[in-house]
Image (cartoon, rainbow, N blue to C red; front, side, top):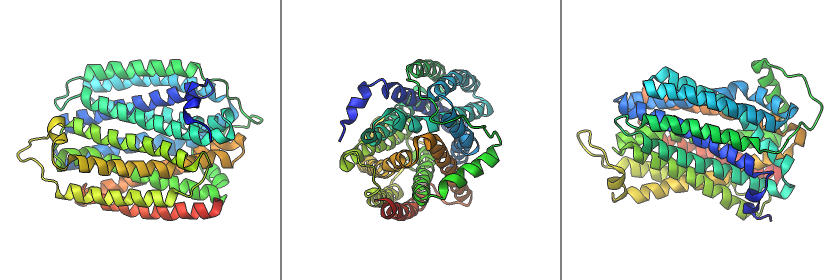
Length: 428
């Protein structure tokens, strides 16, 4: 078993890790700053808040569905480090667009910037996993995957907390958010400069720019392999669950728990940190072996904690007359630590479920096909996440409350457990 931390001292991993971490931080800093500004400063009802959060999540995910096939082709055919540097340069210009939207409180401009951030993440997505088997030893891949996932969610934690702190419920602090997003984009571009070359592992093929045709071809070429099919569908279920939960957090915190944006940041932070902990923990349990044997139990326990979260939220007594718990008053509430601990349980077991599945994708196929395999996974993941967001939005429009939708999440965990068991039987 390789020591996970030693990878952070190597040039073959550290620049990629920092580039991914800074990109995830910036995506979530901008997204959550925008959500707080709109949820607390512009809209005034639970239905409007929920609809906006669902729309924002859908727009960020949509590029993954449309353009992952092209991203996978480019990553397998050209130097992944060069593509990363180009993408991170674009992020600087996107930060300017997002800053204009925040400054003007212009929702269409903010959503345009969010879509563009999703687009640049789409082209980096296959790279961050496909580089790992190219630069790491076979027994380092699971550790590297776990670190990438852990770093991603630590970055989400930092970005969401900072987004909730910088912009308050009155819309103050927009200037600080604008400057921070821009500076982080610059630093991310510098980190990308130090990534070692990751050239194509085969002859350059013709790129198919028809995203519909290429997506169908990509998925057809990947999902006919039963092990990959099961892994991709299981991962997709996990991210559908995650997208529905993240959509629920801001309206749940504001309208059910009657708390301020800082508490919404805390929720997303605990969720992100939990997945980071689960990512590292499962690597230790598996001793760097790529295996799905813990997947079924992990996601069942995740579902159990979702049910507990439902019962806690259902019994929560909110404040009357538009009053809100502050961060300080929420923390000393009798039920706060049980609520946060339950949320931590949801995310820790979620991280233990999903990380080995990503490592499985990158080690099952030939190294020349890893980016396309990840891209196929991203197409299916994003399609399921958009579908999940639409279902959540539709249920909200039908009058199903944010709290009641947690029952849907718990039911989805059972399906993910069945898929994880099927994968375990097929591969281990």
